[in-house]
Amino acid sequence: MRSNVTRNSQLNAGGVRARKPDAGGNAAIALNSQIPLRFRRTLSVTLVFTLMAMFLAVEAFAQQRMDGVLSSVVRLRAEVPGDARTAASLGQVREGNGVVIDDSGLVLTIGYLILEAQSVSLFAADGDEVSAEILAYDHATGFGLVRASRPLGGGHVKLGDSAALTEEDRVLVIGHGGISSTLGAVIASRREFAGYWEYLLDNAIYTVPPHPNWGGAALVNPSGELVGIGSLIVNDAVEANGALPGNMFVPINLLKPIFADLLESGRASTPRRPWLGMLTTESYGRVIVTSVTPGGPSSQAGLEPGDVLLEVNGEAVPDMAGLFRKVWSQGQPGAEILLKVLRGTDVVGVTVTSGDRYQYLKLKPRSH
Image (cartoon, rainbow, N blue to C red; front, top):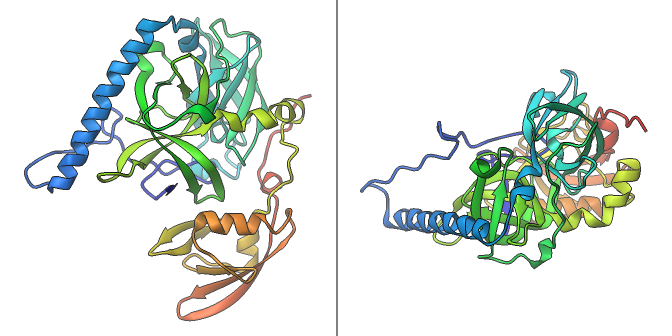
């Protein structure tokens, strides 16, 4: 099964939509006699997962010393100029987590936190604010890399094997702040994730219960190795017995083939993908345009919010994941994408000259 981000879910670099938390940072759920039995069963499953996760966290800490892993997760703060393309959707001040992955201050995070940032700060183990340089952003995976201007004084974490994770495996979700920001969790599922900002993961990691500070959080296996980076909170981490909320993590194995490229040039050397510049949703088996990026390829081509996407270059559009794959299969940015859309009661053709997302974004050049 796959998952899509809905308007009630936190998302990535196309804009942020978040389930509104209660004062404790968790989605509030009330249980009373008016709730149908199937939903009460769902809540019982949630409680079981939560208690299991708490026990597993305590057990993991009892089995091995995790101080270095805990201190490897640091607070990250980014400031973005008001004219940035993502300022309105993602905000001008973004805070989350970063994970130190070497002893010189190299920090891995989720890319939307640092996207188009003019400055990034990390907060060291002693509480000092340390400036950091943006090294890389990779849209295909969602990863971002920064380097602190000095060593941060805490530990660093080794990269593990995310492919080894299966359902019901125990893990830790670690945010900055040490053990008080650490949550025991369970792998709820491994499946496809389609994000409406033209983003797709073939085998994302879903965990329950949800961590309230998920952005850039570390997903750590019982061996103390980093196996994922926190991206979002979703409503359907568990699909059986009714959907349950949780977090979605980007698997760490996606970093390994592009790691050297990111360090050297800030970009993966893989071919760039055609970008249409639109947000989409799925409804009743249809893919619908919800908005178009101002000045982007779809906007310039005349695509409109509310258009129902029927075909891409003569092939039917089955879902968002299928849409993205069909577009990306047409070549590199600049490829012409022929769309057939339903607009009201009319079927119309729209030809979009695809663009390069990296050229559209106002990315700060690396200093070296």
